[in-house]
Structures are given as structure tokens and as C-alpha cells.
Image 1 (cartoon, rainbow, N blue to C red):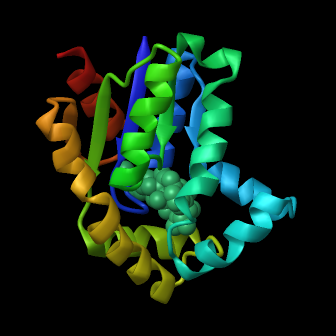
Image 2 (image 1 turned 135 degrees about the horizontal axis):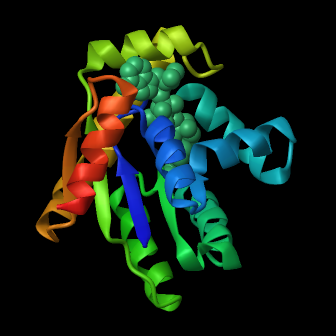
Length: 184
Ligand code: B4P
């Protein structure tokens, strides 16, 4: 059963790999970024609150994200496993995730960290051209990543749950490397 977390800087390919592997294992792909973007598009109350943070490349406040993840993990389709993409993004979210999972008698098996150099990331995201993919916002997202999210690498390493993968290869090569890390 797959219960995985995807870490890694913005644009490292978390969404790409989480989507491919979720299809392969037939488990839900839970992307907090996708859920937030769809809330912004639909102008829900969550979307209205989240939009300005996302446009500036800041993290959306923890409580908003924790509520949406908790609601999603409590749906019945998560019984067979899940892939969390873009969550947790800081230590507060990681500790809250532990509590949510223990309340439903689940645990995370592995955290996958995708390693990609900054300049490759900037090039990928400028090519993608999403609303928050302009150079200034990308630089801010990278800064926020270093301060808030990168500490999760040692958080999961200490628990021996971390696999670091070279994300600067073709999408297929990255998928194969992740599958190998999980099997070993
Ligand atoms: P996310 O939606 O999580 O987006 P991301 O980090 O930019 O992208 P990802 O790593 O998934 O890259 P992708 O596969 O798309 O976050 C957006 C915003 O939402 C955040 O800034 C924040 O404001 C908010 N947010 C989300 N979660 C939050 C949380 N938990 N707490 C607070 N705020 C939160 O790949 C990028 C591009 O590279 C694509 O075009 C792809 O085609 C290409 N690519 C991928 N793999 C490649 C490869 N191997 N080679 C070449 N190109 C590749």
C-alpha cells in the first residue's frame, strides 16, 4: 500500500511524479496546490483567503491547509493509500499530519525528496507559465522553501523515512528511481 509524501522545492516535479505514481497504484493524489488553485478559481471562501498568499509566493496559513487536508484524508477512498503532494510544507504541518494520521490509524511510509538545482527550477517554471510562475514570485517561493520546507528533510531523515532522488533527469527516469527507492 502506498502512503507517500512528496517533498522538494517548487517546480521540482512533485506534482508530475505524484500524479504518475497515484495512477499507477490507483490511490488518490492529494495536492494541496491543486486544491487551493481550484478554490481560487471557484472563488470559495478558502480560495479568497488563499489567493493573495499564492500570488506572492508565500505559504497559505497553516490552519487553512490543515483543515483541507484533514477533510480530504477522512474520505473513504484513502483507505487503500494516498500520495500527498506539496504537504506538509513546514514542521507545524508535519506534526499536525502525524496527529491526523494517528487519529485514523494510519502512518506515512516514506517521504520522497526531489533534488533539483535552482536554475533548472526557474527555467522549468518560467516555461510552464502558471500565474505564480513569474521570476520574482519564483525566487520568493524558493526562499520560502529553504526556510520553511527544507528542514523537513532532516525531520524525515531522523525517522529513517526519507529517500532523496535526483529530480534533474527525464520524467521517466525520475519515476523509475522513485519506484526503486520504494522497493528497496
Ligand atoms: P504547488 O502546487 O505545490 O506547486 P509547485 O511546488 O510549484 O510545483 P511542483 O513541484 O508540483 O512542480 P510540477 O510537478 O508542477 O504550490 C503552489 C503554491 O500553493 C505555493 O507557493 C503555496 O502558496 C500554496 N501551497 C501549496 N501547498 C501548501 C501548503 N501545504 N501549505 C501552504 N501553502 C501551500 O513541475 C513543474 C514543471 O516542471 C512542470 O511544467 C513540469 O512539466 C516540469 N517538469 C516536471 N518534471 C520534470 C522533469 N523531470 N524534467 C523536465 N521538466 C519537468
